[in-house]
Amino acid sequence: MLASTAALQLALGDGAWWSVAIPAALSLLAGAGAMLSERARRDVARTCGAELALEREQVRSLVERDGLKDEFLAAVNHELRTPLTSILGFAITLLDRHDLPGEQREQMLRTLVEEAEHLEEILSNMLDLDRLSHGKEVLRPQLVDAGEIVRRTAAQLERRTQRAVQVAVPGPIPVRVDPAKVERIVQNLLANAAKYTPAGSPIIVAAWSEDGGMMLNVEDSGPGIPEDERAAVFEPFRRGRDAQRAATGTGLGLSIVDRFCQLHGGRAWVEEAPTGGCSFRVHLPSVPDPAGLASAAVSGAPELLEGRLHECTDRAARPLHAM
Image (cartoon, rainbow, N blue to C red):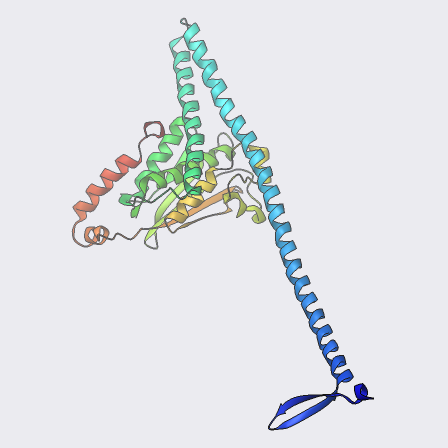
């Protein structure tokens, strides 16, 4: 009888007390514990579910990236082997055949130079990506005429590939940028356009001043890129589905373009060109000059601006094999 009448005294405040029989108190505590346990189970289930979903996404990403790297290695093997085979074949022919007509020898030598420059382009992209991945790439901004860099780089591609390049640069584009990286941006965009523009169709490149910086537009007449794939083509090793069928490549060039734009605080994107191909666009802001060189040149020293433009563009626009 004592157990049945035993009670638990609970303070309610203001001097009031609540008397609860012990069996009832134990029942209340058990119910509260069950509610807390169920809530804890739900919280754990939600947490575990979120973690599992994150792990699945990470695994999927790793598998996809591993597959992309395999494709990249296969592409690099092809891209390196093709010019090396050509270089070796022409070099052996030139050594063994002393009776070749002068015109034929000149064409072979020209091909050797073109293939060597193509190899250097591939290796430069790989080294650039490695430095960017390890945070070793830094800006070395100078006041330059970006329009002159565009014109000279386009002329180099035209000479090397015998492809027609239509250049529209209305005048000087004075900006403070890293001239070597601007040249690489233009080189990679033009090389990409050359892959997908049919023979006989021109590559179109335009540059102009805009919003205190420079705009660059490179158009090709290729198969184009579906809208849902346009952002992905700037990722390392990525190439559009139609691009993979149209031409070979490593998938590094556009990634380098995007990373160099980001270093400048700019951006790169792609739209559909009027020709049905791609219109790759780049905006680079003028990097602020801590020493105030740019503002001094614009406000009161035009001859200083002109001198720096000539100095920097001459240095930045050297042929690829001379750098």
